[in-house]
Length: 306
Ligand SMILES: NC(=O)c1ccc[n+]([C@@H]2O[C@H](COP(=O)([O-])OP(=O)(O)OC[C@H]3O[C@@H](n4cnc5c(N)ncnc54)[C@H](OP(=O)(O)O)[C@@H]3O)[C@@H](O)[C@H]2O)c1
Image (cartoon, rainbow, N blue to C red; front, side, top):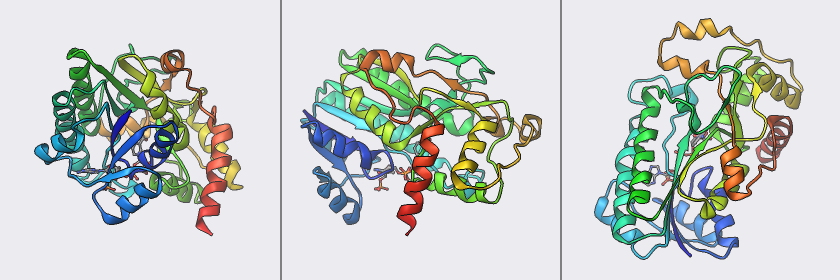
C-alpha cells in the first residue's frame, strides 16, 4: 500500500516508518528539513516536504495514497509546558493540521486514516480499568486531541476506515521528556503527584509497533498502553532502581490539586486497558510494563549518551 506518514521524523514516526517499509509498504513520509528528509530516505521512505498548515500542499502530497497516518505533534519541552502559549502549535497541528490531512485523504479516496491521540483525556478512574467507553475530561491543552479524533471519525462516516490511537505516556531513550524525567529522578524529583494513582505508559518502540498493527484495525478508537499500568510510587521506584539511585518522594495528590484544573493531569489515576486494541489486531507490547521497560530505556539512553 502507498502510505503517507505525517510526523515521520518525531520519536514515534522515525520508529514507525521502518516498520511500515519492512512490511512492504511504499512509504511517503513528511519532513520539513533536509536533515529530516535524508534521515527518512535512509529508513527506506520517500521524503515529502510540506507544512501541515498549507491545505493545498497537503492535498497534493497525499493524492494517490491508500493510507494517511497522522503522527505529527509539537509537544513542548517539560520546562515550557506550563508557559502561556506553549501548546499553541500542538493545538494547531491537532486541529488545522488534522483537518487538512483528512480533507486531503477524503479527496484522494483513501482506504484508511490513522490519527495519534492521547489517553490523558480520560477522567480520573481511581483504581478501575479505563476502556474506550470511560468518560473523558480533557484539560485545556488536550482538548485539541478530541478535535483530531473527530476528523478521523469523518473518514469513517465517509465509508473508509478511521482509526484513532489514544496512546499512554511515551518513554524512550531519545524522547526529550524521558531524558528530562531521568535527570530529575537522579535528583530524586518525581513529576506528578499522588503515590497511589495509576500511570499508564508505552515505550516508543511498542507505540511504533501499534502504528503498524493499526493498518489492520477495524474503524474505531483504541487505547494503546502497556499491559500492566503501575502506581506512581511503583513507577518512580522502578525508574530509580534502573538508575541505581534512591526513589524520589511522591507528593500527595492534594498538593498538585492546588494548581487547579490544568495541573489535574499530573494527579489523575489512569489505569488504561489496551484490551480492545489487542483483541482487534493481535498487537502485544514487547515491554509489558515499566518493570521491563525502564531498565531497557535507561540502558539504551546511557549507551546513546556515550
Ligand atoms: N503519548 C505521548 O506521551 C507523546 C506523544 C507525542 C510526543 N510525546 C513527547 O513529546 C516530545 C516531543 O516529541 P517529538 O520528538 O516526536 O517531536 P515533536 O516536536 O512533537 O514533532 C513530532 C513530529 O511532528 C512534525 N511536525 C510538527 N509540526 C509540523 C508541521 N507544522 N507540519 C508538518 N510536520 C510537523 C515534526 O516534523 P519536523 O521534524 O519537521 O519538526 C515531527 O515529525 C518527546 O519527548 C515525546 O516523547 C509524547
